[in-house]
Length: 257
Image (cartoon, rainbow, N blue to C red; front, top):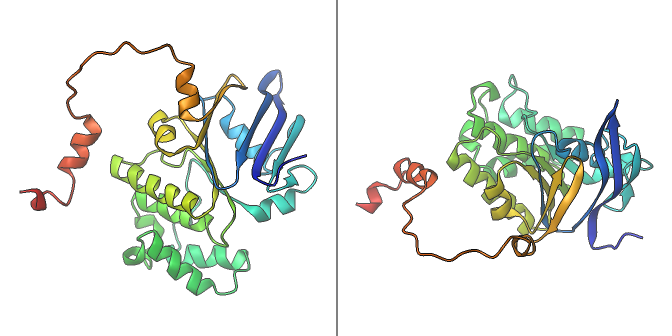
């Protein structure tokens, strides 16, 4: 029996491709409104897990419940509850940003596609480029548009599969801010990433997937307790490369003079 407070639950999930066992009794749960980060190296099984939870792939064993619905027995109900943003944007380069959003709104039978589109363009700071072909967009703009398209219809659960891959430092920070804002407004988010700082900054809970198995799960504080006690010493730290980059490229340099 899955608690009502749980948005996503995986129990003993197994998946095998030929002789390769990709998922080996994977178990975790995500509370409603939380950001849950699934960490792991390439080939650990992160994307396979996402595909099972989003009904794109059937498990060979175990169960997965999303928004109260079994992904195998009730895939249509699961799809009504979710959106997925993958590692590569799913935007149409020929259409404008506005046309991409209107198309998705119509496919999802949103009552007023134009109003929904206008609100999302404003939320994701895309008004100035709304009527340009998406083929002219930068990588960061494409990512923002892709996330905006995922939010058409206000799905309660959002899957983000390595959403900041390829973004520059400022683009990553902008995406982080949007993800936090969504969670603050009640959206449940399952995030896969290879960037440990991303999980540290965003996630309420973290699971580490290694060779198809969850080897650790909990809050950042929980995971820190599993690490040997640190040796304390005073270190004078200079700014990180990311801090230097953001400072030098900031539009506010004039205000600092």
